[in-house]
Image (tube, rainbow, N blue to C red; front, side, top):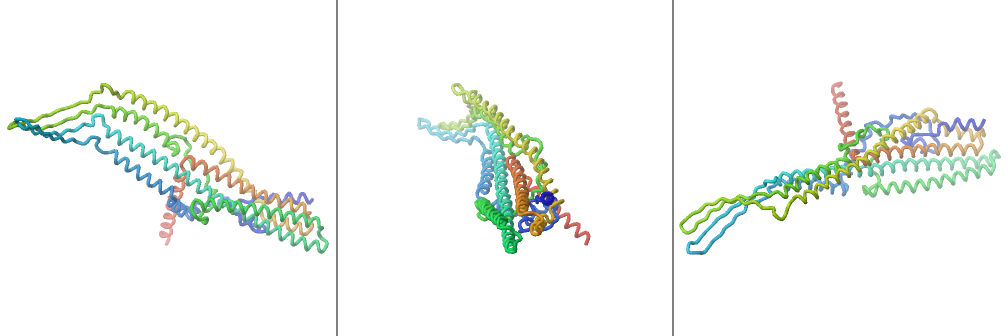
Length: 438
């Protein structure tokens, strides 16, 4: 009979980690939970401030300087390769000779055009690398904030468990004095309190470590953040792995750059002619001359250099294929694991919604009335705590799976910005609707 009662009470052992206040108190209170408790509006409460702080990080400011540097590199490349040359000469003879020469080498091989395209492509690669680095840094930042949030929940739960255990020990001492409880049962409760105090100490250490990680990033630990676990979805990511994935954009452009490098090698080896115009005065006679000179490539041929650079195409292509395989495997793991974790999390929430209310209080009442033994009561409490901590672990796994992929693939910043854009448009529509109603 007692075991059946325990089983019925433990059906409500799971509680979504997104609502820690229920289990943070010494005794859980009846509550109505909703799987949609985290809506899109939650981002507007903390994401703008977080992104603003993110832009102030030293490494992010360095990336902004790199973006400006890339723009300047393109501008520097888009200028003439050859400057005109001016020559003056004088010959002292029976008839003094004065001459003035001006010459201009022509960019016959289009060195300027290819150099500009090369600089533009190199800048695009640098921007793609920066975009990926920003996404990975954002994933690191959010991971630290998620860990801080989860450890705070676990610490609050551990504190509640200690407070509840202290109350039960106090009640047990009173019951032992009137003979309703044995010394052995009181000692069991005291050992349970010691165990929960140890768990609380461990949770405190983990919370301090999580706070320290956030402080190392921002210089402070109280950074605005709110759970967004209900927003995690496979559809947040591009389904097709290709150059459009930011993590592959740089590798793909490296292939394009290696092909352009071949054209650049050919242009650098091209024989550019020089046209000159000269004016000469010899005695009383004026002379005007026009000349053309073409370099003769007798000893130095660009063919070998072109052959060397051409091998870079195959190297860049193979590196792209390696990156594509890694990203493809990452997406397959993400698209396989996240739905399964979400299914378990949804089951976890549904179980709580249907069977959670009053489970802890019911066990307390049954124990105090003597319907269940102290041993069964403590077993139920441990299962209750185990269920809650399993939920913390599930939530952590969900966040890690999503953040790892979105950061690794370089799509995290795009997703966050789109969330703010969507919320801004929704807010404007709501405001207009209110004005029309008035």
